Image 1 (cartoon, rainbow, N blue to C red):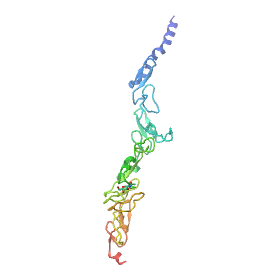
Image 2 (cartoon, rainbow, N blue to C red):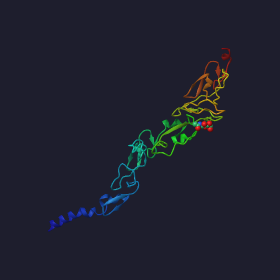
Image 3 (cartoon, rainbow, N blue to C red):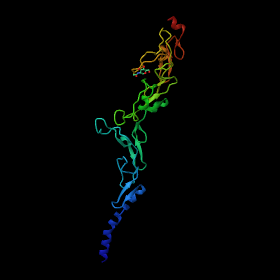
Image 4 (spheres, protein in one colour):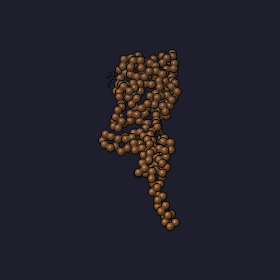
Length: 265
Ligand SMILES: *[C@@H]1O[C@H](CO)[C@@H](O)[C@H](O)[C@H]1NC(C)=O
């Protein structure tokens, strides 16, 4: 009789605990239990059906991480790719904290964007290509345009790829009074142009960029637009410091002044 009762109670044990979500720690306080099935419906961020995650814990004990558009995934048609995915496929998810740890070169809570080279060296702004498209002072110079609105197709990178717009103490652009090249330059804005001037030995004004094509651009400078002429073409610019080493016979910060030596030569 005793043995029979023991067997009976043992055989009852699993079925009683399967009632509800006792074996799932009652969904850990991060979901609701469906008693009849013994399954948890986890809250958002803890593995809800609507969450995008590589892993969802049945007991709602693990967090999901922010999702961004995949840097690389399997396109689903000729014109669709970059579906939403945890950490944008460029980081690992810490399921305790719900934070992405991004791989080198990637940033953002979902690793959804690129970092700028050397963070623009402290001499520029790191902006996405959507912003860059709208700017008229970013090199190569061009008219403002729109690059946005098709994140799963041709503007997929509008908020994913970033570049530097380098600082400049003078105005940059194709318009009157603006100069075609910025003071700081290079893809990481680590280089600095030298003072500019008109070559004292020539009749032409080399600093006049009206009608002249901008570098790597299809646009030309408008009337009154300025060209930057490092050291007035009469010296060598040290781009690390932005200072001129003038040729013999020339002086001034931009080497645009001529001494008797030069005229005499
Ligand atoms: C850029 O703007 C200038 C001045 O407004 C204009 O003359 C030129 O045609 C524009 N270029 C393009 C490609 O739209």
